[in-house]
Length: 67
Image (cartoon, rainbow, N blue to C red; front, side):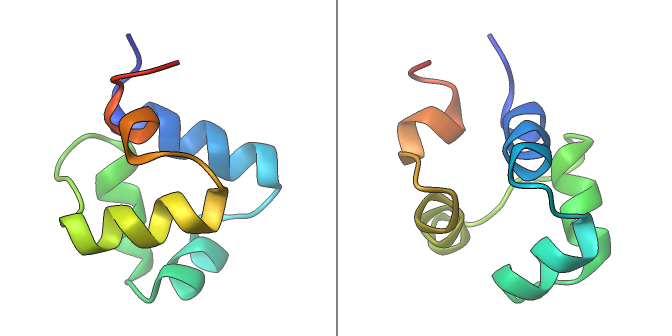
């Protein structure tokens, strides 16, 4: 089962955007994206909602509860 960071990275790459662009879209610092993708920290629920809307996926998908 893929973890949040792996899923986020894959979604970002599928969309063809870099960490800096994603950080701007989500209103966070670039280092935050890197930390999320490396599994060093996790987003708040409010950021999970923004991420799920941006990529058009469910929070369950981001959390690894569904494929």
